[in-house]
Image (cartoon, rainbow, N blue to C red; front, side, top):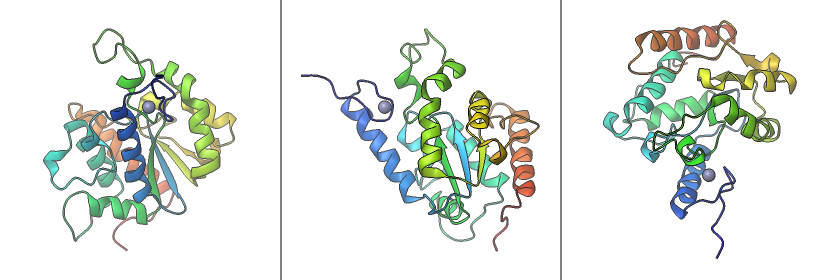
Length: 213
Ligand SMILES: [Zn+2]
């Protein structure tokens, strides 16, 4: 019997891989605004479901360090600080209420897509990944997300810039000094500071609603 293929990455996939993709879609759909004001584009979802951006973690320790760094960096950069509720759910609800949505360029974890990455024998080539999946993300932006603004959340997505410009999304692309934001890596205070400052500047320039109004 032929192995099932994943509708996200198009590769032969285990039942667990397919189930996790569906779970991610369910979580993201739950927090998706009707009209997307700003689309935040990350490269790919993390491997652990608890590290997915839209996972409504109850306590801070449920997310791994990288996931927590991105989550907190984004919420702080956008001045999202809900007064009531516990865990990450109220943050995600406020993120949604402001018309923000986060999507990954690749629907599946990079380690599932690039053979040898998990074993450490190859490195993921960001340019090659965009080459493989750029058309798919553009189709999702054109037909589904239709955002007013697009923000790139890691320098690994920089190869998307010419694709977005050619597809007439260039005027809606909000860059920081001409580049995507640096991923706010927890071991890199400079990248964290740049991420927060860049996010705050983009939010001000785009005149997004901030604060608790
Ligand atoms: Zn997949």
